[in-house]
Image (tube, rainbow, N blue to C red):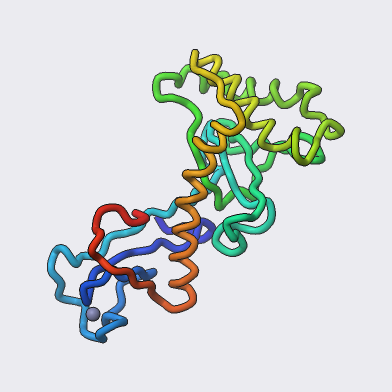
Length: 217
Ligand SMILES: [Zn+2]
């Protein structure tokens, strides 16, 4: 659960009719300074799931991370994102101005989306070869790179479409891809980042409790 590079884990507990987020349950409530030790079951702390994972531990997945820096430190909601695909050994294939990169480090704090449907695990046996063969075609030579039209997104989307075709599913165009794979994750990440930074700065973060339904959990 606790992974330094993916950030500290967060918890939420209830006190003073509020939801209080923190890195750990304090002795005293930061609002009323009363002991929070003896609490009702509904006040028991819950952990908030961290949206980030170490991409090098994810197999056959699509990964997102800021081009510069990390999500928790530098991401501001508009920062450029870089994307890649992992093989079965956690090597992250990604395309940039220098051609296809095979990163064994640098994606420790990523958003990750698995690309294989549970019923398609047969594909996993060939995944590494597909990804390697795909990456060595002339399409992804360094001189073909164009910042806006032939970039890391083109590379991952083209590969994902090859996989979808093999699975007998429909291909995605760029906007469907962004809506389905990118926006929901970055939105979730942004919420978490806001919470995380506020806790780092103030030690805790407080919200009203009337809406108990979702939250970032
Ligand atoms: Zn309190």
